[in-house]
Length: 93
Image (cartoon, rainbow, N blue to C red; front, side):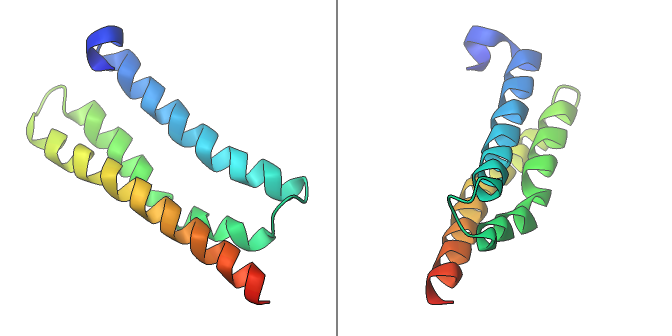
């Protein structure tokens, strides 16, 4: 994506993708399609913020790119795990 969009636009695109993912869950909870327990995934919100900040700092210091890539991977894992846990809790209770 960076090759097609350029560095700055790619970071903004990633931030927007993270934002849409989190907001989408909030919207479908508000619409009543899934249980409010799904909102437990907001506990992992620190990782995407860390990823975006690290990608922005990586323009000046390449050492931050390692942190950014790790934070992005952890965001996907944590988001999926917490969302699954919330849905499982709502199923049990």
